[in-house]
Image (cartoon, rainbow, N blue to C red; front, side, top):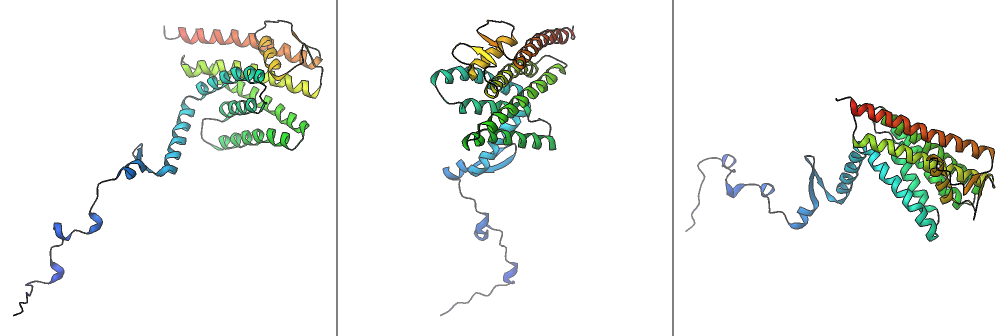
Length: 270
């Protein structure tokens, strides 16, 4: 005997919302460890995969740069000062110091405000940073020295930008203090680089026992900036003597104006 069940209402009107008729796409399985490792959240936005994780890291670094630009620059300059004599004593090539100088330029020059200027300065930094090793690798020492000379101009320009930022502060905070200190260190480092470039273009511009190296140029620059005057390295050319005067006087004026500015800001709240 065959029993046939006939529905009392159309099949299309059957209730398909029950648990036995839910679409399989609605069923959520428990996440596996691999899924958990591939999914993260950043400021309310789901970030999945290693590529998006790297983008998140870059975004966080950019945010830190825009908020603590001169703090990063200050520590980068301190690292350059420490690494230069150490690598020079160990006999390393100047590529490491060139890399640190390029990093200092990138931090000190690229504007924090969005706009076309940021892209232009970033492109300029990339061009000059790549021009130095490429011209040296292609065997053009003159062009390599010229590009290094442009580095000095960009470094001194970055020092001026840092001074402007420090002097425009309306209160004393760590960022403005780091900007003032970075301006002083930038002037010392890139004046030293300028001295070394001049010595490469016009030999015998300095008189130094054992030769005039890049580390020696950095040493002479800070001795001049701080007006210590040890006398073991002496400028012999007119241009180097003039630059030494400018650096020495500029260093003293900077310290005097900076102290006066900081004292005035400190006394304002009272």
